[in-house]
Image (cartoon, rainbow, N blue to C red; front, side, top):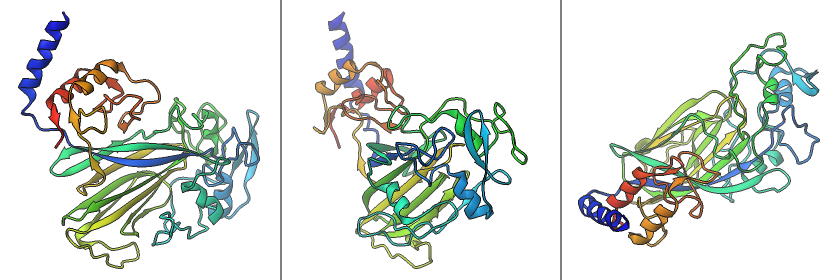
Length: 363
């Protein structure tokens, strides 16, 4: 039986050897997990919750210009004010230029933020407020020179970091039908499965300008993109999914100042994202910019840049469901589930065929 299986693999390798390697762009990212101000925590509860995440109290003062009214719901103290919060677009949270540390510079306070000290925690390590998780984001070749990452349920830290936030905190912003509805609140459907909300993501890479590239995004909540150190996309705030895009041939910063790029030159690309409100999490990124590095599909034993028997044995050893944590669409750590080439958290026949099609030296 084993001989028959190996012969079949050899035949498959021979038949598939002419198939081109799959293309995928692999981008290193850093996540930081936070605890938001919800009904299961208060600002005084340890470990420290962050006042910029899920903080209706700040919204009452900054947007409604009224003191919050605190009510007791099932033993939790909940601040409420006026009508449902709704989307809050909040541009201008960050300055047009990156700081010397390569991080956004706080430009507030604004309606959905508090102060510079608190904002600096969004993208810097602080064991008292956040936990850091390094990972990768995988952009899939969608054809026509475009690479895409698309998730309408973007929860990369489920089963990691501080873990899921319990559903009770939904009373902060909208009224869950299972709880008390206050005047002016509306019944809204709430995802019954707890997720790990309240996190940030930062991405730092470079690209060589070819001419004609575009970058398109749609999602929630905050999203800032810097090219060559200047802010080109500003979708700050706590809001529903919002789109924005830039064409690199006519690139300007958010203040309208031109950013002339020279074909053949290398430029920095920096992206910063925050998920600050529990209702939904979306992240759609489509670009023709060749960001990051090309990942050689099938080369699951990295970084030897050749697909061979070592990769095949690794794949067979990983066969079946990937161990947790595993998030669909995200590249897993090499020692977790490296043979999951299609990022669906299962090592199966599709991954085997991908490996066999890429047999030999990577391009």
